[in-house]
Amino acid sequence: MRMLTELRDKAAKAWPFETLPPSRWSTQVPSFAAADPAVIRSALVRAQRRPSGNWYAFAASSQIGAKAFGTSVAGVQIVAWRGAYGELLTAPRACPHLGADLATAPVECGALICPWHGLRLTGRPNRSWQPLPAHDDGVLCWVRLDAVGGEAPTDEPMVSPRPDHPRVAAVARVEGVCEPRDIVANRLDPWHGSWFHPYSFTRLEVISAPPADDDLSEELDRFVVAVTFRIGRLGVPVIAEFTTPDPRTVTMRIIDGEGLGSVVETHATPLGPGRDGLPRTAVVEAVVAHSDRPHFGTALLAASPMIKFVMGRSAKRLWRDDLAYAERLFELRS
Image (cartoon, rainbow, N blue to C red; front, side, top):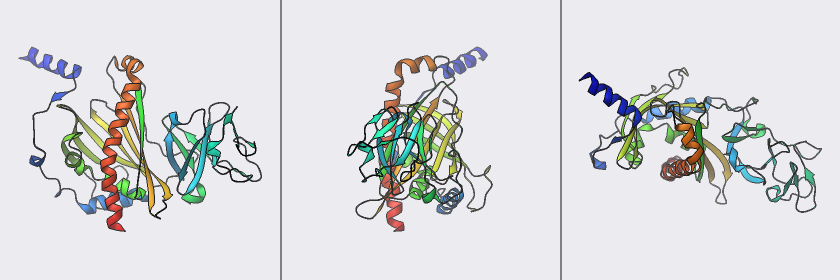
C-alpha cells in the first residue's frame, strides 16, 4: 500500500493534470449568495486609496522596438521609442515645431526624426519639449504622468514581485468603454469565474475574502481562491490569491499547486474619452508563468513563441467576456 501511494504521488508530480468528468454548466453551485456586493465595493474603495506614483502601464516591453509607438494615456497623447542604448523613452506625441505626429517619425540612433521638417528629438529636454519619465520592468512599459495623477511621484511603479527565471511572459491588451474602476471591480469578484468563464475555470471556491470594511490592513486585504484551470477535459488545480498593489492593478498569484509563484497582473489604463464622449480604458494584462519542473527552462527555449501566443490568446478571450461585464458596470453607474 505504501509503495502504491508513493507511485501515485510520483505520478502526480510528473503529470499535473487531472481528467475532468463531464458536467453541465447549470449544475454548478450558485455563487450569488457569497458574492456580497458590499465586499466587492469595499475592496474597490481600498484599492483606489492606494498610491500609484502617477505611473501607467501602456504596452509590453517587447512591443517597443525599432519603430516609434504611439498611444494615449489618460487623454495625453504619448510616443515611446528606444534610445541609443535600448532604453525606453517616452514623450508628448506632438512635435514641438508644428505638432506633427511623432508616432510616424523614423528612429535613427535613438532619436526621433520628425517626418514634416526633420527636427531630431532625443530623450533630452529642450525649451519647448519635455520628455516624460518612463520605466521598463522587462515585461511592461510604463509612463509617469504627474499632471494627470496628481499624487506624489515615485521613481518606479508599484510592481508586485514576479517569479524567478526560468519564466515566460505574455502580454495582452484589449480596450473597452468603461473606467479603470470597472476593470478592477471585475477582478475583485472572483465568484464569477466558473460561471462566466466555464471554458477556462471549474471547481472554483473562494476560500477567504476580506470583510466589507473600507479600512483594512494590507495583510488582510486579499482574496484566496481554489480553482481548477481547464484545458479541454484536463484540469490543473491551484490556490491563488488576489491583491491590489495600486489603484489600477489587480495581481493574481499562485500560492499552491502547479506554477507556484506565477502571476497574472491586470492593469487598467485610462485612455481618455472616445468620439462619443464616453471613457475608454485599456486592459494591459501580463501573465508571467514559472515552473520548478526540471525541464521547464529547456522547453521554453524551443516552444517559447508558441507558449506566449497561446497565453496571450487565452487572456484576450477571457477579457472579451470580462469587458462586457465591466462595460455593464459602467453603464449601470452612468
